[in-house]
Length: 130
Image 1 (cartoon, rainbow, N blue to C red):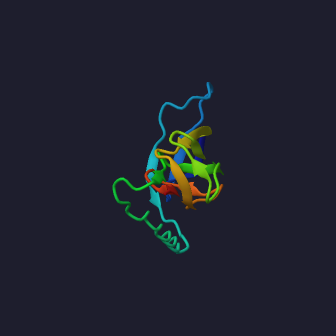
Image 2: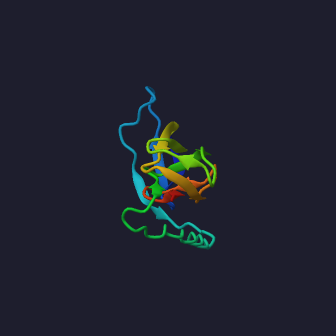
Image 3: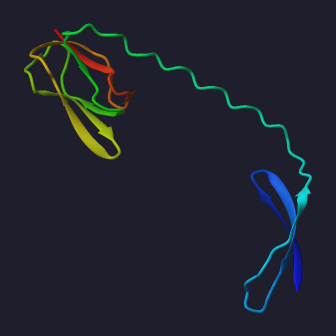
């Protein structure tokens, strides 16, 4: 028994004849020329707005940067708080794993550049310590 079917592959429709064998397996499937397909015009998706790049930071500055791309889980310090080198200042989450970000210098937190829930890129400034 032969059945005529239409299949669509990557937006192109094909009329095919399928022979149904008793074992349920077809030895060959003849393929006809592509059938014309009417399609509605598709509007191009708007380009995403460019993300502002992190401002360049001078060498030796007290900016704690993100070691990886991820999401800010928590900011563990406040502006004006004294921190010591090695103290955790931010916790990031990436691929369901949490990563603590330590201060690389001792000092006072001058500014916090991120909030919990923010997405960050590798190298982005998170906290400034003065």
